[in-house]
Length: 208
Image (cartoon, rainbow, N blue to C red; front, top):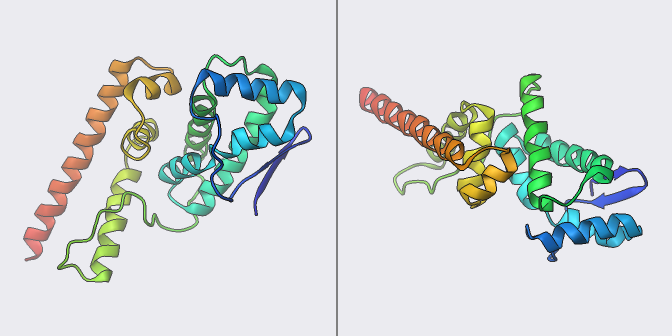
């Protein structure tokens, strides 16, 4: 089971999702600060580890491979633990950790850190009944490839909204943007993906 360790703390990841107070509320931020200040390692572990599933999904969407996503989640926890002394609780733990993860993934993408394998089940659509398993897999890979071509921040906003169900206001707080900018990025993401769909449909028409 992968683990993240920093400054004497340990965050166990890869297990079942923990239910608790890390739901994006101000109470969760206060609990996180209280756990760190009082040295309550179990509480801190639970408060951070419960954010692992959405963080992993987001990182996988940004980076394209589960192994890279695992590495990114671990590094996100490392950076969060190192930054805890400066965390004032103005943002919820979910917002704070997501901001770290998004910046980390963009940093890695800019460094052109290669994915260790092609995109897999990200943004899967239910395969059409007439598709063979091979055709359904190819379609899934093509959809994921289209997502991978979105600019990193646009891709992050799209994934937070469509995959994680975040509100525009929550995304704006996480990205440090105004809500209008978030809506603009969502519009462009949907436009880009719609253009990809049209090209795909046109290509299939030419092949017929």
